[in-house]
Length: 91
Image 1 (tube, rainbow, N blue to C red):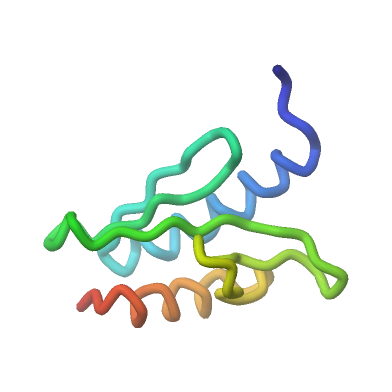
Image 2 (cartoon, rainbow, N blue to C red):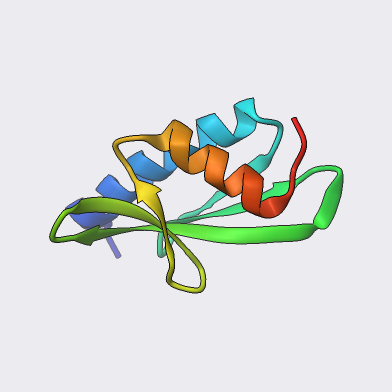
């Protein structure tokens, strides 16, 4: 099964978010299919969340596993800050 252009786009945007999260001390592991990030705080491994990436009429967005939007993919630093805040991680 080959990846579609949409999956490549998701992987690209999730990679940008993973870089931002790792700079903030979190662990971000890319799940290949369907593309999503498993994000955890290495100090509290039980606290983890999954974020994926979806196209909408206003553009591409990062989205929590429960469906709420995290933020636009155009600003992965802001999305990472929101994820850090929700996970309660400390830099």
